[in-house]
Structures are given as C-alpha cells and as structure tokens.
Image 1 (cartoon, helix red, strand yellow):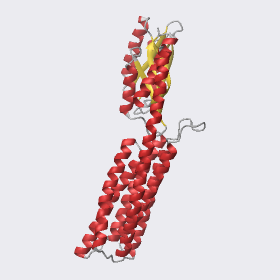
Image 2 (image 1 turned 45 degrees about the horizontal axis):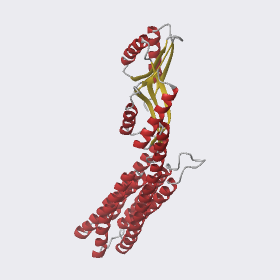
Image 3 (image 1 turned 90 degrees about the vertical axis):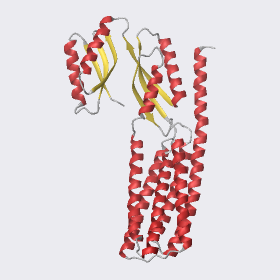
Image 4 (image 1 turned 180 degrees about the vertical axis):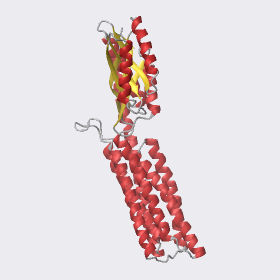
Length: 388
C-alpha cells in the first residue's frame, strides 16, 4: 500500500473519530442539563412555599434564583443541541460557538436575578415584615443546601470534563446558591435565638453577590467570544509534535481559531531545507496535519513554508550576524524564516516583536536600519510578526 493511501486512511479515520466523540459530549451536556432543570424546579417550589409561609424574603429570593437556575439549564440544553449540529454551507466550521452564546445568556440571567433580589430586599428594608419559621421550613432549607452543593459539584465537574462553559457556569452558580441558602439558614437561627431579623439585609447582600457572579461570568464568556489566545500548553504541544519530524528545523507563527469548545482550526509555518522536492514537501505537510489532528483534534488548514539555506556558508554566517543584532533588542523575542538569496541580493526573515514594546513599529524600523547598515548591498524583506 502506498504512503498516500495510508495517509488518506488515517485522515478518514480521524474524521470518524471526531464524529463519534461529539455524540457522547452532546448527550452528557443535555443529560446534565435535564438533571439541573428537575432539581432546580423542585427546590424553587419548596423554597417558594417555605418563603410565603414564613414571610422570609431571603428564602423567597432564593426560590426566584432557583427558577433562574432552571432557565439556565434549559438554555444549556438548547445551546448544546444547536452547537452539535453538523457543518453546513452557511456555517462551514460548525455551530460550536453557540455554546458561548448560551453561556452568555446564562450570565445575563444570573445578573438579572441578582438585581431583582437586591431591589426586592431593599423594599423589605424600607417596609420590614417579621419572619415566622417552623421546624419543617428549616429542614427544607437544610436539604436545599446539601442538594445544591452536590448538584453544583456534579455540574461543574461534568462541565470541566466535557469542556462546556455553560455547564461550568451553571455549576458555579449552584455552588454559590448553596452558600446563599446556608446564609438564609444562619439568618433564621439568629432570629430564633436572638429575635433579630436580618432577612432583608441578608437578601440585599445576596443580591450583590449574585450580581458580581453574573458580571464575572459575562466577562469571561465575552472574552472567549472576542477571541482569546490558545492555551500555552496546547500550543507548545502542537509545536513539539511538528518539530518531531526530522525534516523540520523550526515551527513558528502558530495561529489557532476557536469555533467552539474543543473545535480548533489553525495554521503554522515550518522551516525546511531548501533541498526538499515538491513531492517530498507535499507528503511532509500531509503527515504533519494528520499527526496534529489525531493528537489534539486541531485541523491545520494551512502550513506555510520557510526554506532554510543549506548550501551557502555566507548565508549561514549572515543569519548568525542578524540574530546577534536582533538579540540585543529586548523587545524582539524571536527571529525565524531567514533566507538569503545571493543571486537576487535579497534577505528575508520575520521578527516577533513583544506586546510590551512601547512602539512595535519603531522596534521594527530600528531593526531594519541596523540590518541595512550591516548589509548595504541587499534588499531587505523583514516582516513583523505577532506573538499569537
């Protein structure tokens, strides 16, 4: 069997693995969301009953928060279902980013619930109502605290396992609810022992905590929608894999585009000897893309080429001299893609300029001037790269 056929089979096998892996993840998210809806609806019903009977604004507010949690779980289910739809003509990279949108909606719901809780609590501070607790109501609150802790850890860990921001946010919210429910229980104990009502004040504090939680969730989700840099560990692992091929002497300019949790496409530049034929290069690129996909589920849609001088000692010496020049600048973090064409009298290479530089363009201009002084007879092609 030829190497091309082997490569083709590995590519097809990798695609099938991706399809089969996506199904359990979607089902896990939906199943966890259904559990969250069921538990939160039951808790909301019990707390609403206890809150009305005991005239407790804190418990009633907590019940409203459980309703928002149930709505969050419904949104998580809808988001997972939509995100799991296959790619189509209008969305060739799939619908995975829908999960970020559902996480954003959940953040807004949490924020709204916190504002509502705060407003209602302030009203009760102005017009106080004396709470009336019973043994049954306290038992229900205790049960709610335990249930929320268990649910919160379960949902959060499941979200981390399947890399779902919606589930992670729901889990964090549930754990926050357990603290809130515990605080309402503490307020009830204080009232029963000291006859001091902290209900309305506690409700206001709870509202502020929920608002802060909602803002933090929203900020984190919006950051992912805007486009964050890839995880350093993932980027380094991909680079190490690319460099494991003996023909490749350098890997640079790795850019990863996120189209939903665990859905990446990207591109990379590789340095190779200037002696490789087109056929050798084609087979090398195919092997690289398959290897990266099988290990990290990252599709390299583009592999750029930097040819390296291997026959010209003067080119090697020139590279060393230019590396010395760029190395003296504290804001130049990397030099790559170097090639000297003695016939055309051109020198081309890329420099990575740090974001810490006060003026990145000024750094680029300074390097161009210094290299031109050292090599006056050459035309320079110096590209300024970004440290993605």
